[in-house]
Length: 110
Length: 463
Image (cartoon, rainbow over all chains, first blue to last red; front, side, top):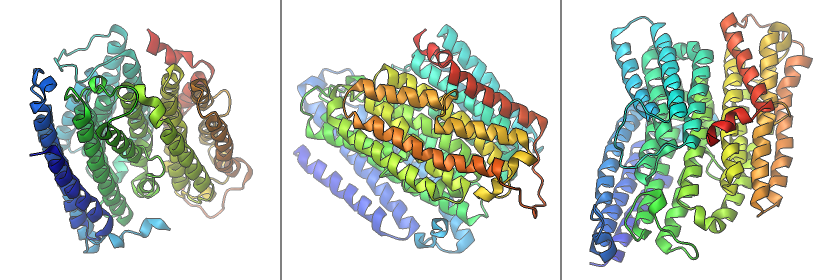
């Protein structure tokens, strides 16, 4: 299949993530949207890796254009670390104000 | 290499010490001893160019005198930060050892972000730098402002990470030889491919988020205000200059050849950052919040280095890192001694604590950029770099004008300290130990020495 299709799919997923972060008010849903953004990038990286692997110049490389697939694992690991910290922060907030609504967060404004 | 491995190892040591040692004082001493050791070993590496541990990193991180000097500056500034503010860390909460462990992990991330050679290491370095900071921001668990700052910082940080990754993916897609190495991207002069251009813009946006350059600065005041002051001091100095160093390294090695294409964009961001930072800082009543905006304003000056990208800019960013970190860390240390963070809190400080007032004055003068201080030299180098670059000559003029604006809000604090009477009703005496005052005066001395002989710092770069 054409690379354009993969790029379109990844960008659609990424955009859904961005729109979700900007419009939703529930901290956990915002958080899920961030994860969606990261996974859209994962998909894009794998697609690009495959695209490069089919091109003659990259075929000659020792790594056979597989760097991006390794990169994906790093993104997954970092995302997992981020999840653990982020959920801890959300739980901490829930314990104090019994809500995960980000609209509560306007004390610092004034 | 030393700094990456040893800071990570010492972070683990600190964490374990928290599990086994109940004494609240011990972590502070362990942290200071560990950081002094790491600094000495790092400076040894800077002199001999030999690391204690040789690891085959497949060229993913490289060390030259430029980034070794930068890491040495960061480690020394953190050491001064520990000496001045470690006792404040103990007041944040019960998990003192863990706070220090997280700071060591941040330093590991700083070393990685300063020496990366592939986009993978840039990503990992910046993440190792940010994730512990989310925790430190929220470390005051019962305080709603701290909670809010942590959540806001976390969501913004994760969001900008997503944008950065998208940029990296596009750069990878646009690179003809499928490489993440920043000097091997083969962007080529002339017209950029669509993928590369998208990658460049997304990376620019995400790093602007991290270094709080306008128009991506909106999280900064809230986060810096809500975080415990002792950690605000750390993240507005060390972490911010490290972000700038990663920024300059990325743009020099990866995008240096297409400088004419993104230079106007950076010029716009610089002006916006200077404008928003300085003008908003004028209206702040809380000194802590004023410092948050002033850190945005100083970021505007550091952006001039990325705008210019020449030898002077490299010298300037080293000077700026040292001058800005020393002055801000010192000033925050004094601020933490006061109960009242508004400008009125500084009223008559010169009568109550003349040494503290004197040191604060020097720090503020350095932040403004008055001659004989390090701040003057660093601003001078930045402006010289921007002028030598030759394009957009209005930019240095605008920068000078905004530096003049910054004098207003810095001098207001000096005026409060020297020309206003102390309020009568305060029952809270300012406690400053002789050691604290000595370190403070030592910092003042460093600022003056760098201000008169900037060569002693820059010289390390050209050995």
